[in-house]
Structure formats: C-alpha cells, structure tokens
Amino acid sequence: MNKKLAAALAVPVAAGAFVCAGPGRSPADAGKAYRNFTQGTSASGVICADGACLIEAEKVSVFFDIQHFPQETYGGEEQFCKYGAHAVTEYSLRNPTDQALRVKLLFPFGTPPEYAVSFGENGKIVFADGAHYRVAADGAEIVPEVRHTYHGDFYYFDAQEEKERLFDGYRKDDFFSFETPVTSYTYTLENAEADPDEGSGYGFVSSFDYNRAKTRVLLSSPANLRIENGSSKVFLDCVDFRDRTFTVYAIGAPPEQAPAWQTKNGDAAGERFALLSQKNTTFGALVESGRKEESDVSCTDWYNAVVDRLNEARTDTCVVGSFEELKKGSMLSRWYEYTLEIPAGGTSVNTVTAPVYPDIETTEAGGARVPTYRYEYLLSAASCFADVGEFTVTVRTPFRLSNSTLAFEDGEDGQYVYKKDGLPHGELAFTLSDGDAALPPEAGGMSASLLTALIILGVLCAGAICLAAAGFVITRKKKKSK
Image 1: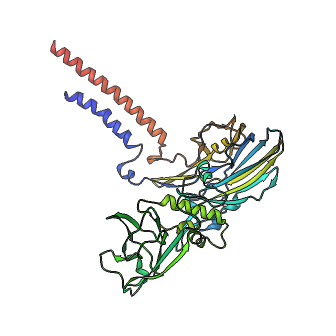
Image 2: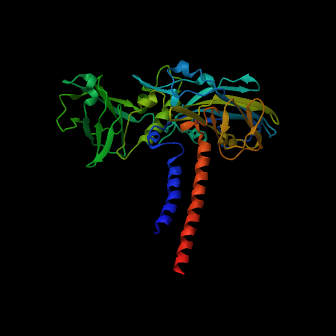
C-alpha cells in the first residue's frame, strides 16, 4: 500500500478507536470508574382473588409522591421506616350487574428491596414496613387480613403468578400431607479436640440409602448433595457446630438404618459425630414446630409455604436444604386480603397506599458519585377487572424524570402526568435522578455530551481528509502512468 494512503487511512482508524475508548477518560482513569447496583422491588395495585371478576374500574389513578430517594444501606429498622416515598392508587369500581356483588381483593406487598435487608450475627433480618401499606374504601380505612405465601426468587415478584400460591385451608399435595410420618435423627459433636467455635472447619459426609420415590430428606443445615453409586450422598461443609448438634428429617418411609457420618477425609467419625436421639412425628407437627409463636403467619399459610418451599427445592437426590430462612420470614410474601360489597349498579372508591422502592445504580468516576433510581409499577395488575376506563398516572417529584415507558407530559408544580382511556400495555418504569448530578463534569471540566460531539466532528473531518488524500494519491498515480 502507498505510504501516504496508509497514513491517511490511519487517521480515522485512530479517531474511531478513541471514540470506542469512551469520552474524556485516559487508560488510568478507566480503571477507576465502576458501577454499583442495589436491587429494589416492583410496586403494584390490587388484583381480584377470583379468576372471573365482573367489577369494572371506571377510573384508575396512580399518584407517585417521591420527594426523596432511599439510601443504599440502613443502620436499622427505625431508620429504614423513615423513608416515605410512596404511591397512592385510587380505583372507582362499578358493579354493572343488577345484583349486589362481593369482590375479594388482594393487595400484594411484593418482596423487600435489598436495602431493607441486614445481615448480622443472627443471620438475615428484613426490616418491617407494614405501617407504610394502607387500604381504604369510600374514605374509611379498612383493616384487612394479612396473608403470606412462599416466594422463591428473593428480588422478583409477579403478583398474578404469586397469587396462585394463596390457598384457603391446607393444600393437597402428591407427596406431603399433614399425617405423613417423619423420623428425625439428631447428631451431636462429641470429644472434639478443636474449639467448637471453629466448628465450621469440620466437614462430614454420609450416604443415605432410601427409596427416593417414598422418602424426602430435610436437613437442619445447608449441605452439598449428589447421587453416588445409587445413594444420595450428603456433604456437610460450612456448618456451625457451636451448639454441637444438627438434625436429619426423613419424611415418608424411613431408611433402614440411621445415616452414619464420616469425616471428609474418610476417617470414621463415631467418636466425634454420634447419633444423639431418634424420634417419630408427623409432617404437620414438624411444620408447625417451625412457626414462631408470636408470628402473624396463619397455620395454613405457613404449612402451604413450607410445602411450596420443599417442592421447589427438591432435587434428584430428594434431599432438600433446610427451611431456616423460611422460618425467619425472609422468604415469605405478604398480602392484604379484603372484601368489598358493591350494590347493583353502584360504585365504590377503593384506595391503596404503598411505598416505592427503586433500583439504585451508582456510577463513580473521577471522584464524582452519580446515583440514578429506577422505579417499576405493575400496571398489569389492573387487568383483572372486567374493564378499565380512564387511566391516569401522576409523578410529583423535584427530580428529573427520564427513560419512561409511558409518554409523560410536564404538569404544574413539578408534576409529570400521563392520561389514557383504557389500561396501557406493559408495565410502568421510569428513572429519576438529581438534575445537578445527572451529567457530571468529565476531565478538564468539559461535559460528556460536548466532548462526545467534538469527537464525532473530529472523526467526520478526519474521514473527509482521508478521502481527499486517497483521491489525491490515485490522481497522481494516473498522471504518472500516462
């Protein structure tokens, strides 16, 4: 290739590489920029408990009042409960039939945000926020029944899917029943030479021989599992043996012999890990023993949650980990359940209030810390009504709104307003950010947008020069060849 032509083509290539590297950031600065993501949770309105709902929502109004942002971490429940950003959803419900109707409604709390969870000496703690949820009908506050269901994914919640877990009475299951027999084996750590506070350093293994079609095994501590030579092999690592005991529960047909344990290196563990007791009980009694006496979770909701948990955790080994997290309440979704009676041809105004917990994405670069807050509201919950009329969403906030799934219009007093006849498609999501921090200055005090524009202009100019140089070289070659 002609050297002049090669040099000319190198200019836009270098400029393009500069753009790809990112505006205003040297290789040294690039290593300093990073992002931190803190999980929030979706907000939702009410849904009908029954599949076929005859009630119409003549008007639905969703009002967000967001005057401040949540913190990424909180020191305790009292501090967390001071967070007050919320959404108020008002439904004007109409009974189009010629007879009075009773409609059962569910108001889901969803899952707690990541910043509502604390990890301490006692494990995972979820800060209570029940005081932020309220229900009213025609101006009078309702005291609803609190219901609970198991949810598997800690940070994902779909109200329509999760409501299927709500069941009045004890759920029937192909394997579990209230009277299913349970054999419990409690083991103790004996004659340990090491300090029991260092018990997590011990590792034990056991092969369980049982009919996996007739037996499920539950452990009081987490474990690693696999099938080896036709037996379910259980590995206990990272187990806290400071109380020197743990229990194996055989639900259904018991194994022919109590499981024997060895240390991970194959040595007999009889002198250290011995069978302390063997007892018989029922599955219903075992489940109820795990429910706290002061708990507001009903017996039936708790039983159904445990069954859902054990069925979800089932593996080919039919050995499942403990439901300790379930016992702490951190794997339970909460619901308000209440009933409205609407006369024939009449209406009722139902209002629900709930906090809004956004995802927090924080970018840090060059000493600047830029957080953005992404909110989500499940509009699809209102699809349970027979019809939806006028639909309005209002966001009152001093912050800048962007990246919305709905086309908001600027209103008065810092409000963003959206109106439509009928329910919008999809869910509502939008981002709020502090206007002063939304576009931080880059190196040298030049804004990111201005610097990017100048780079693009430079690339275009370089491209033009490249083409001119190439044309010049080609013309010179043609003249010389004549």
